[in-house]
Image 1: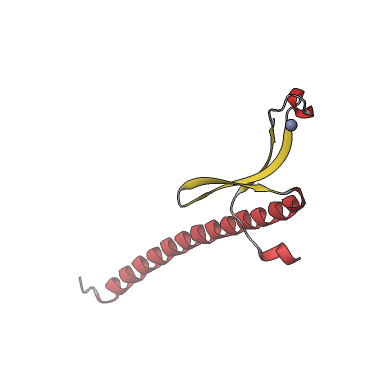
Image 2: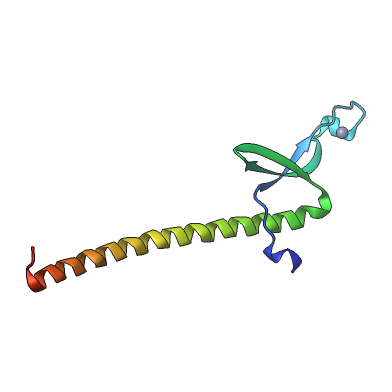
Length: 104
Ligand SMILES: [Zn+2]
């Protein structure tokens, strides 16, 4: 699939908005549906509207982004764990080395 590796930050939402015209069907309903994504960029919250034909696509690429971030988080956690293990290993080796010749 073409969009398999494309990514976009944001959460997709369908929202409803009344246009305000009294003779419109939406006046007594919940409003016109429209799709949008919200995301933060440079510390600001941003919203982009998504056309109906692109909703499937945007759901896919924002999911790709979330999956990627999730993977990144896991790698970071794994790295932290590995660094701790290496520290522990190093300390043990230092101890063993000291014991060998009692140079301290
Ligand atoms: Zn309306």
